[in-house]
Each structure stands twice: as structure tokens, then as C-alpha cells.
Length: 209
Image (cartoon, rainbow, N blue to C red; front, top):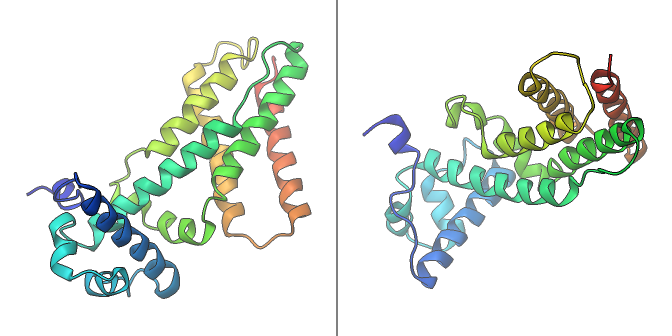
């Protein structure tokens, strides 16, 4: 069994009862992680909170790490849903106005996605790279697709630079700021000021040179 196999579910639920069991196990995993911390989230404790036997848990998940990976993927799908709904770009305004509006839309969308269950997000974020072996997550891939759409809609942005590289830089910059914001305790006004500054940074970076 490879390391990757150890992080995958043993089987996928097919019946309604099985899906309900898996949902209860993942909800319990979330509660234990947030309330008691990663180290306390044993499979026995998670099964207890879920109201299932540990044997039932092992039918679907071989270990704690596979549980957290499944929860992480579910969390990222929820983040993608928020990102897709919020990231609407203007196509008809003048180039300068379009860049400003779209940069702000992208920043607001990424930050909004990072506000999905922030307590759980803080726990999962510290383990994402280890559990995914440094691979790009589904959320990062989608955020980069939106970043490319932003860059692609910007006339002559950054001269002859590779738009894929620019998109990567945009996504990394905004995501790092959003991650930092999700763990900070700033007031709503301070958070809004941060988003405004990140949007201004993007405009300066992407405006035609």
C-alpha cells in the first residue's frame, strides 16, 4: 500500500444509510478537530462523537489521516462553491475600470471563501501540505483558473510575461493574504482595509506597463 492509498477512503458509500454514516463521521471529525485539537482526534474519539462503532468507521476510513483528507476535500469544495458564486467579472466597462472592478471582485471572492467555517479552516490549513504531500489542492486550482480569467481580461497586462505565471502570482498573493486574514482578529473595518489594499496591489501589478 502506497502512502497515497493510506490517505484514501476504503470504500465510497452507495446507499443512503451508508452516506448518512459517512456524513456523521465527517461531522464528528470536524467537531473533534475544532473542540479538542488534531492530536486528540483519534478514530476512537471520532467514532464515539459520531455515534458509530469504530469498526463502522474503519469500513470507510483506514486511519485518522484519511478522515482528515476527506474532510479537507469536502471543506475545499464548499470554498469553491463560495468562490465560484462570488467571482463574477465585468466584461463591458473600459479597460481601466474593468481591471479595478475585477481585481476587487477576485480579492473579495477569495477572502469570502476563506471565511467558510474559519475555525475548521485554521485547523485544516496547518495540515494541508503534509496530508496532500505538497500537491496543489482543488481550491487552489480553481482559484488559479479565476486568476487566469482576470489576467486574460486585462489588456496587455505585464507586457510579454507568461499569463500563467502572472495568474499564479496573483493567486498566491491573494490567497496568502486571505489565509493570514482568516487567522487574524482584526475588526470588520480593518479586514475591509486589508482587502482594499490587496486589490490596489493587484491593480498596480496588472495594469498595462
